[in-house]
Length: 110
Length: 144
Image 1 (cartoon, helix red, strand yellow):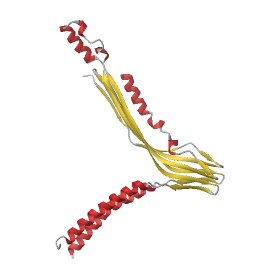
Image 2 (cartoon, rainbow over the protein chains, first blue to last red; image 1 turned 180 degrees about the vertical axis):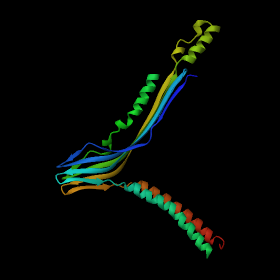
Image 3 (cartoon, each protein chain N blue to C red; image 1 turned 60 degrees about the vertical axis):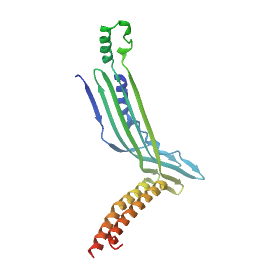
């Protein structure tokens, strides 16, 4: 069988990229964006059939803004308050059952 | 068909370079000396597939058929093979913050997704009630 298969699963690549500056008055705002990509490609070449498939994911998240003015350069972070709150909820979801388990043990010990 | 497969693979390879980082910034809006720039986190995904036969199988089948039957009964397009291409994609954007630029300075004001937080809080509440009830049953269950 003279079949050949070509697979490529790229790693998850994440990098911070500078966007095009936005001019507002005498200030220049340069966006910093974290770009996360993941690709998967696959090809199959055979004597009787040929096929290929692939998918890709791209995520763009602004992380900061560089403010350039006559006074100098300043970095303004962009917090993701929703993600922070959800992380807090997730942490609480793990801790509360543990605390209740400890409370049950203490109550039974008495 | 080989060319279509190669085109598909090349298109996927260029995906990171084609990602437009400026898509996360909306158009600046200026009102009464204050400029507001909306920020969003953007995600997009797509998948594609292409495939088909080269015609070798059909040609072999056609030759076999031709050996036993009249030549007119052999499908003319059998040697061309068949194939198809399919794909789909989607884009998702969520507001993240607003940049406010005034003569006094520049501020970043985060935007909270209240709907998502309300849903998560409801799930957390149900989770806590479940564990609390379980704990109470374990502590007082024997006396009830």
